[in-house]
Length: 205
Image 1 (cartoon, rainbow, N blue to C red):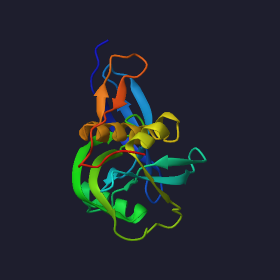
Image 2 (spheres, helix red, strand yellow):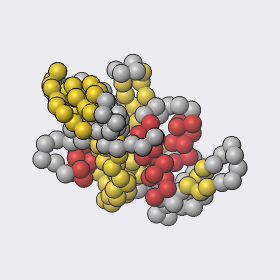
Image 3 (cartoon, rainbow, N blue to C red):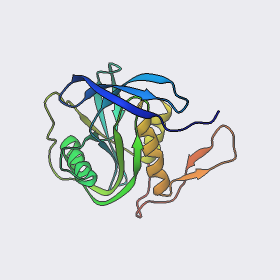
């Protein structure tokens, strides 16, 4: 079947919160069908894979109301109006964990849910991280900071402790950027950690 971009015929706001707006869109598909689609309009967001000077990954532990579980994650949050993605990433890392970092590399920009919302996620690798102060959490935020070696992080992902698919993807991109992933022809283990050091730091547990 040949496909093409749908034509947006109209849009109505159905519900608004502090962060999100629910809209109902009227589309005409490439083949002429009329479709109603509900979309969440959200501000863009950032997420940070931060590696400390000691070679540890800065992770966070918190309760997620959507799935009603305490999960592991990496720092993330919505961008404030007027912020650049990098400014937002630095702010969120400091607010949620009390950490800063000397080196920053953008890993990419991704859709978290291309079917249902407008949010684009800006992902960063932060290196040479260090403790710079205390957490400065928003109302309702309760976050525990955790530090893991790269190998421990991979184990947590395999154990299902990290449940957000976008964060898992960002973690793999960060490991690739750091030169810590290698491909294998072994069917059961297509990806594995390399044994090289990062910034001269031994990744021993």
